[in-house]
Image (cartoon, rainbow, N blue to C red; front, side, top):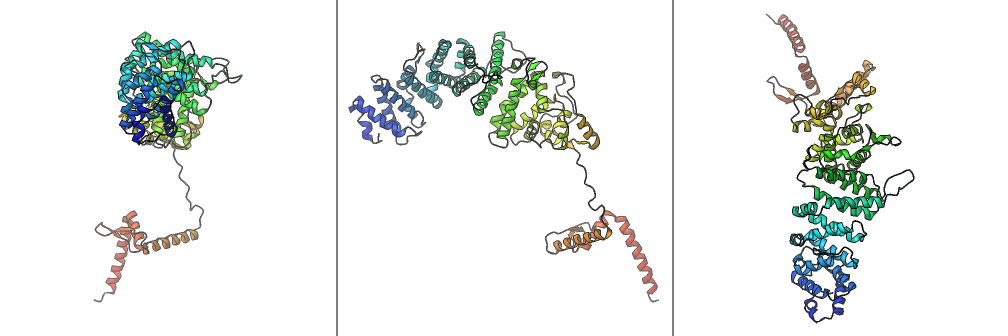
Length: 571
């Protein structure tokens, strides 16, 4: 389809078949384009108006072609006003089966429903006017209603995916919609049920010795949209303040159930590591919205016959916490020193701090993982190595203030907010920034002693105690005091020492002569002046090191000369 004015002026004279031929040519030519500079607002309005005026008379295939063409136009922000009128938005809502008064819970023309949803998603994302229109027209209500009525039945995967994407966009942009979905339609419960259904339908073990659930790419894509929507629905709950008390028992029950579901979801497998990490990233983002009282739900009673003893602590199965810690380790390895580090690491650091502050079992397990008892590690700097302690200590001096603060705070919490213990594990030089920010550079003390248990977690290894007693630990660097090298001239003869001294004097004299260096000496008035020779430089150093001896020697020489001069002086 060409872009001349004639093409747009002759729409009225074309039959439906001729019009569809032009639309098909336009689509094929622009299928991969995201901008249409040859279409100004007037031309785009003419094209869209004609398209929707003929849409009612087209069959399913022709309608599909027209909707795909509209989807192309929704990619371009320029001239988007041509697509934001009610003459466009209402038909799209109807074709998507999301009229508030008539929700289509069993769509027949699936391909056109999905295309209409794609158009709506793009427009909601691109245009505040469309966001407002669909907020008022009840799209979120209709989506929630369709979710509610199809929870127990099978809805096409593409339709349910774009329903959830639109619900995510609308709840992200409008607080009133969040409250309505949460309270009027009980959206949390239905979304919980969908997650449980997906896990139940994939509950066959991946191997005989493995009880995990393996999710498909499509499952994970859909679950991510659900998790993003749940994040929106929980981000501004009145009682969601990370405090230790939640007033509403019903609300507390919902959130505890959600955390329990998220624990099971953390244990699921993906078709590949990338998809699995992507899913866990969104689970962790959602967990940061949860109040501290709910984190106990991430733990479960340990199974006695469980062979994986690394995930057991104090009679609790810590597999979910272990996954979060390994996720942090993986993210640091992948993003350390890159521009993406902040976005990749802040949510998981924030979550671990919240969990460790509120749950003693989680804190002790995390400390065992991140800050195990010290041993030979003190032979190296705390920043040297690839253990999680080393990586977090390196981040304590990161240029990004948020990343630096959260990394340091996590280690501080694991040390039960003991300044002495933090310095022991990280060195005073690395901890100074946090201590300054928290006003702890004065006398060392535990800032929140009552918040933590009184029993000691100290269990230094015998190797650590031996190294500490033998060499001592430098509190600034956090490692053993570096042993001074022995005298390199030990065992040399006096002749060899004189030869080496001559070499050094010759080298120094040549450097001074060529102007490479300019050693300074002090004149009688105490002002620095350039030394004229190595001999003058040596004498000045001797005078500085042994001024009394040198003056006494000079005085003695003067007296001897004076006596001789006096004796030889003619009378």
